[in-house]
Length: 311
Image 1 (cartoon, rainbow, N blue to C red):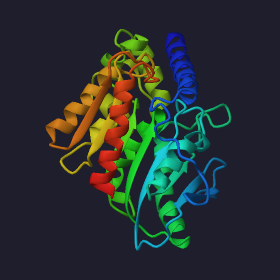
Image 2 (image 1 turned 120 degrees about the horizontal axis):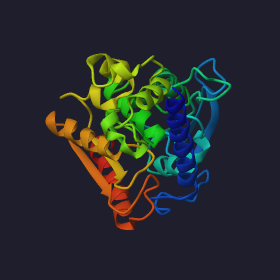
Image 3 (image 1 turned 90 degrees about the vertical axis):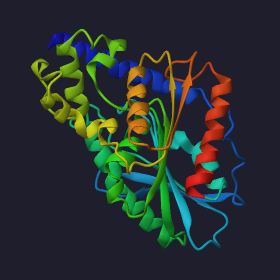
Image 4 (image 1 turned 45 degrees about the vertical axis):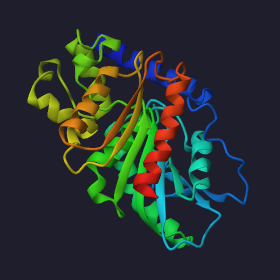
């Protein structure tokens, strides 16, 4: 148990540390930067969607209010499930709005001393419950939404995939695509050698108990009972032939989350015939900091997916 707590603490510390680094470094190299003003759009900040202190979202509305309908892009923030804020994605949200989309950044209750029961699953439920409120508020402000995409970075990417693959059938408008970077997509301990979880069932059980909110014992690892315990936070487990087109980027030297899990994500989409693009940053870790050419490709692919599936 002691070693399990040590591994869990190390994971969260590394995840948060990397998230802070990622906030300071823009893997897209400023490609999404726009000169934000009233001619581009307006933002309505801190709109509540639930009872929790963190249950708020920012809504970015394009200046052109003449369209009959709009596409919505939800972008979820990074932070290792324990930190971060929607304001940190201001640049990409402004960029999405400048392209004519309604854009939303959504906060969720972070796992902390104040909220020790918060976990990946509870956060995903908050995101699920927020989407109808986002769509309703956009309509009230004169921007009816009839289609949407969901995206995010790191922890936000995980939550975006869970919504796209697990909860899309609950969405008030059709989910057309998902994109994001470096989010954990599944939790097979053998993939998590970056924390030695492939060699320690005790550590894996402790860490994934925290993340899933379910009690997991070392004896469960590798059994159907374990698969069931982490199913609700494993995006890969929900992929089927009806899953939405997907774009994702991962660093081959990621030591914060399991890079091998990204191969499982690609394999699942391939097996079910789902359109996808899998961009590997061969010289980068979790911050995607060392591959400018791949960053440019990722940016181009985001534009391509938006034009193809959401325009």
